[in-house]
Image (cartoon, rainbow, N blue to C red; front, side, top):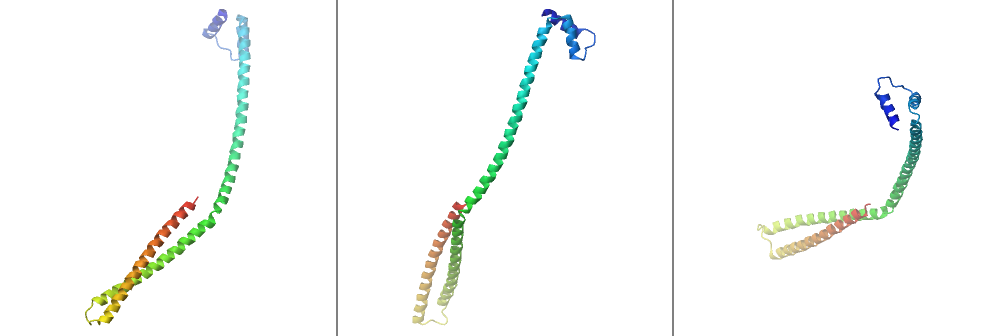
Length: 184
């Protein structure tokens, strides 16, 4: 074996040109060191084994890439199916959402009507209070009592409307929470 190593060192270290054909290099080495044949045969066997392993890897890589491509296609189909089912499922809540939206709309309109009514009462109260403060012409006592009674009724009515508006505000707030909770 030492002889083969010396030959290889001599061959590589010598000043002569290196043959470009591996077969001719092989023949040249075997002429000088016929015992190197065993090493070359072992090398050829290992090279074939390595080549086989590389081909196996290429085959497995190809199969794996095909599986990945198939899984991606399957995932894309599954995604489409889930999106369709999701949209279909969301439509099941549409009637409930519509009912809540209608309730919000009706309560908002009712609140607006009560606010308008409250504003009108506020203007009436303001005019009546202004009239009561005027001393010219002096109001007869009976008429003044009637005006005071009217003012008290208007004030009670505004308090009632304020309570109703407060109840409507709370009702609308709760309806909006319901609408928020119904969103998917």
